[in-house]
Image (tube, rainbow, N blue to C red; front, top):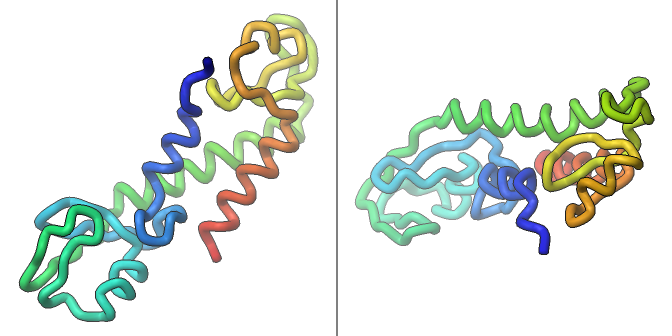
Length: 147
């Protein structure tokens, strides 16, 4: 049985628990350390920072303090570049497998690498997609974050 997709696991960690999309302008709730999109937590609390609780751990705050989370924002941006940019670049270039000298036409989701048809045997228990389908799936995830 194949293990969980590590790329999808990473993408899930970079998603706001309120909107379930990639963090946009992430803020950390001082006191419990949970992160949310600034707009999501503001909407959840109806604009008030007084007498609120964390939607994730339910810890109460008389006056909540939010802190911009720059490192998390950078990680979200990096994940977009990795999952979208590198796939797109690889699919449009004339990439060949170093072992078999065959075109890299497939994407292994578990290993997050491009492979050729001959390499597919080594990834038999993994989820393998044509490169264009993998690009399309990543694009849907990224596009959804901006809606």
